[in-house]
Amino acid sequence: MDEGLRERKKRETRERISDMAMGLFMSRGFDNVTVAEVARAADVSVNTVFNYFPAKEDLFLDRQDQVEGMPVEVARGRAPGESVVRAFRRDFLDALETRDWRYGLNEGSDVFARMVADSPALRARTRELHLRRETLLAAALAEEAGADDDDLAPLLMAAHLLNTTRLLSEHAVRGMLAGEAWETIRPRLRVQADKAFDLLESGIGE
Amino acid sequence: MDEGLRERKKRETRERISDMAMGLFMSRGFDNVTVAEVARAADVSVNTVFNYFPAKEDLFLDRQDQVEGMPVEVARGRAPGESVVRAFRRDFLDALETRDWRYGLNEGSDVFARMVADSPALRARTRELHLRRETLLAAALAEEAGADDDDLAPLLMAAHLLNTTRLLSEHAVRGMLAGEAWETIRPRLRVQADKAFDLLESGIGE
DNA sequence: ACCAAGTTTGCAGTCGCTCCAAAATTAGGT
DNA sequence: ACCTAATTTTGGAGCGACTGCAAACTTGGT
Image (cartoon, rainbow over all chains, first blue to last red; front, side, top):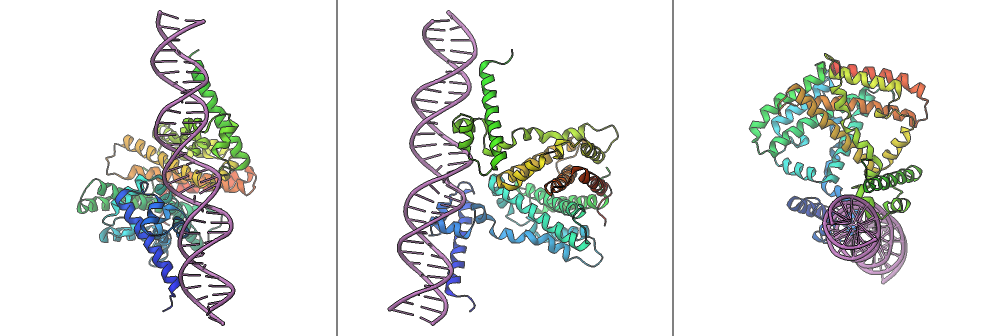
């Protein structure tokens, strides 16, 4: 037992707060739930909530922040000789088959998406996360290529890659929100994904 | 006289509020100025401030919102036969020569940029503006190409185009904030811009 | 049992922002 | 000049996120 009673209690209250918050958010929407209510539901003082979560939005995203390094892993985990674009294409197409949660293709991620869409604060946070992933990926690419600080190529590639996956994910979510069945979304998305990555590889000459 | 006294006064107080706000923001930073202070400086009640500007950030951006349709004009104003990418390349390179404010190459836009960087609220708003421009440009491109709703190409092109110009602008600002002279920034930026747009046209095959 | 360290809590306060109803100002007609 | 209707401004009350601080409480080690 490498976890003392103190640490266990901390973890427990943290999880209790997070769980109660998510429950309330799911049933009533992010903006319609006050931090005081979350605190009451978790049987804890408001200050304690802010003790664990620096801002209200962190109650919602929490684990989402651990996903910010995901693109870097995709880039690093590619086969020898494989280009970065091909690695992302492969990763996304795999996710399309397995409905991987990493790209928001998960069943039920539409509820999630609607909540984000309905709350300005959550939208802002989501974009900040996107930006962070962009700079992290860019840094990884720059390191790998040994690019100097004046070279914009890593930043450009990171931005273009993440924006394609982002737009593909958003497109899938639009379909889900429109009530379409996944099996009718998947083939269409697959076509669009192929076109999108082709566009990345061969350029927009039009 | 197509402007009655009522309308003139409205315009005047609006401008007074905006001017006073900008002055305070410039000298003390966005987050260190309270709306109440702005109101006092403009000799107006706090409610009146919110009467003209829906949120504090609007005191800062105000006219910036009128620029959200700018990319659409670049796309629409291109020469016959000219591709969209070429139009944006031309527009940006022109702006590089004239230090056009539209891309934040303006002298003094570094102060502006630092203020945005220092305030989470302003950063969020700036990104929202970026997103709006993206969807507007995408809509224009989709209309022109007659693309259906399932086609992601317009959205992808819009995103890629605006992200290149965005990253180029940010790069320029980084140089300015580092204290570099404009004449040393320009040639380097020109090289990067050429590479960036080449990347867009010919793709990221690596 | 006791002390030091860490955790929770209550309280007071700031700031952005909203709602509402009462004043003040202006426009237009007589 | 006068009255009325529409518009603008204002004050006040209040909500919700968030901070800072000091007091109470809990845990770990001696």
